[in-house]
Amino acid sequence: MTPLDIPFQVRNLIAGKRTDSEVRLPITDKYTGEILAEAPLATEAQVEEAVSAAVRAFDTFRRSSAEKRADILRALRDGIARRADDFTRLIVKEAGKPLSYARNEVRRALDNLDSGIRAVLEFAGEQVPMDYLNGKGKTAYTVRVPYGPVLGISPFNFPLNLALHKIIPAVGSGSPIILKPAPQTPLSMFLLADILEEAGVPAGTVQIVLTGNKSAEQMVRDDRLKILSFTGSDRVGWYLKSIAGRKKVFLEMGGNAAALIDSDAPLERAAKKLAYGAFLYAGQICISTQRIYVLKDVFDRFTDLFLEETARIPTGDPSLPETVNGPMISRKDLYRIRDWVEEAREGGARILAGGNIVDETHDLFAPTVLTGTRPGMKVVDEEAFAPVVIIEPVESVEEGIRAVNASRYGLQASVYSDSLKTVRRFIREVDAGGIMVNEIPGFRIDSMPYGGMKDSGLGREGPRYALREYTQPKLVVIQD
Image (cartoon, rainbow, N blue to C red; front, side, top):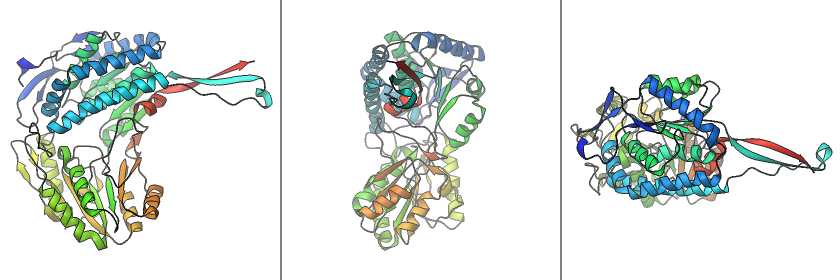
């Protein structure tokens, strides 16, 4: 792909118009390093225009029918379906995502929109019981009303689908949204802007605004925007919350997902699925498997199986259908994870597989397995966002649960066990927003409630659940 054959406008969508600017950001192919396009960074004046347009649009959009809002989502779904190959190609190149996984992201985006359409048409308030004491003879119910214009900030790793997780509930609730894409991967949103224009979506309803950190902070601080929905690192997310003023804030900030392997677990299946879940897309997924704790009596057997599966993970060009472990998003992140692994090795950890840069030119890091780690090491405490996993033995289920919980994160976790007692205890005691049983921590479908505890975030995604988060109840009491 070259700048000449990109089949859409590389321009922001502000107040119903495609806009350019003099300050431009090179967007690269994450495997080859080739410059795909130069994207315009919105100026402060353009950002102000976007906010003003969202405020103006809210007065009309908040009164739109559910059918009208569902029609906008249908238009997005149909447009993405028509341009599915373009989106897939873009995601492979600008995000470095393996081809099969990029196709899956587009498929999930379509399913996400279908779920959103159903949720919008079914969304309602509730009857409020009141036929007693002073309420006798009255009928009461709630209607759900939007808070106001939304600022959505989406990450690089799912440049289409995670942006839609912000756009769908905003549109569905009658809230105009300004979507700021990640600077590494804005092209998918510029293609979506073409679809928004083709669909005739009213000006200011959905705006695509790539801008720098200073202007983004300006929007976060702006009281005219009533909701902030952010997906990214916990450091940035909590900072943005601290400056967001009176906004309602949703944060989805990843983690270092853990799995517990019980003595009676299906070891072969667990090893195969967890290896894939650890190294897919170079581990650059919020719920990638990063920590595995194994009951001591099956530790050696499971580790051998896991290493066999690790050796089968294909690393390389993301445009090839067989690739699982592609490039890191940047050279900086390639060096970062190299240094984290070296820090662990110097601290006494053993490298069982990988631990090295495979190809510096293409930013490839080997699927890496460590053991003998301890708290305080970055590979244990932090979100690696890289193809690195630790495996450690535990003496008991109780010790394993303590290890899983010994993290400031709590997005999703999993347990592999055939014991109902173990499973129920894990569900009850593990502090995570999602518990997977005999499945990898990285399992997700887009209609489910998705979000974390502790430093992993606030609120829940998934159209049905996010619609409630983006709206507030208005009580109506009628004297019969």
